[in-house]
Image (cartoon, rainbow, N blue to C red; front, side):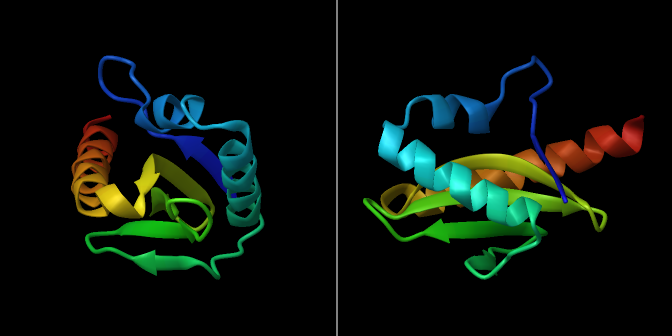
Length: 107
């Protein structure tokens, strides 16, 4: 599987911005989770609706990575967060996924 980060119209990258602010231990755990996704391991993944998925990393504050599938082999990272901000992060991921699909369709 190929894992890419969603990029906003103006060039911002919510996932990369979130990841850059993580402490080294959290960044390491997230990197491991991304490697698992690349290998097709979805054991800690659940749907949060509308084609958006949540990868749960149950350490620290309960990190979450949000993504969508574009076909069978492409994963688009939409953002990340913690259990505490879960509802807001899911809403943002839904908006980003809808934007990604709109822009892809318009190409």
